Amino acid sequence: DTAVSQTPKYLVTQMGNDKSIKCEQNLGHDTMYWYKQDSKKFLKIMFSYNNKELIINETVPNRFSPKSPDKAHLNLHINSLELGDSAVYFCASRGNRGYGYTFGSGTRLTVV
Amino acid sequence: GESVGLHLPTLSVQEGDNSIINCAYSNSASDYFIWYKQESGKGPQFIIDIRSNMDKRQGQRVTVLLNKTVKHLSLQIAATQPGDSAVYFCAENTHGGGNKLTFGTGTQLKVEL
Image (tube, rainbow over all chains, first blue to last red; front, side, top):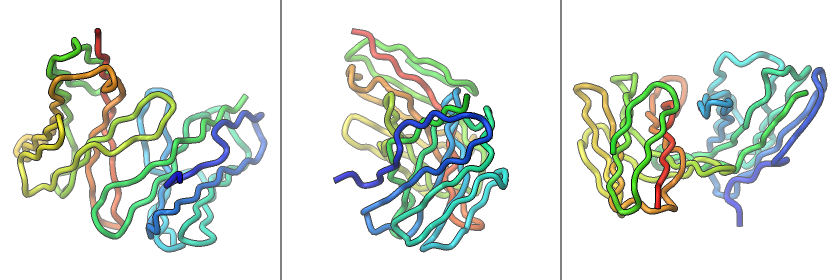
């Protein structure tokens, strides 16, 4: 069983479109995250939710809207996609014991 | 071999040699540090962690050293194998508004046969 699963794995879309990425974890963790990895492999945190409550929002454009229907799911909706949004987006989760994260395998978003 | 860098540097080592990957972290209040390995097309994978009250921790073939005086972290991999080829990231945990892992820029490790 995949611990943190993201869909889709690849997403190619045109500028101006709206798209969503879904994430689910079966680890029973309370905290979930979205990270963005750019073309230079730099990983930057975007959002964090703890038990459906937003706790971290790192100066991300408001075109990005996370939604957590329950603590096992954290989705990312992006409006009016721009070329600069092209990146790999990683979902991660963390349990209450320790600080290690478990990452999903990523969603490669390409905006053309 | 060793590597230090602000951009994504590449460290090339011969199979069987030891590898040392270095990282400078930014926040003196960070209390926990993790090394992650990222293979091509995959998400980062936990390797080893260390708390700020320790200066060394060993795992299977890997050792992490922490020097808080100069805010430096290193990952040593013994007897490097082809399967160790990946990008390695250090990450520091900070509090304040929620626990947050901040990642370093990463080092590409290439193992030559």
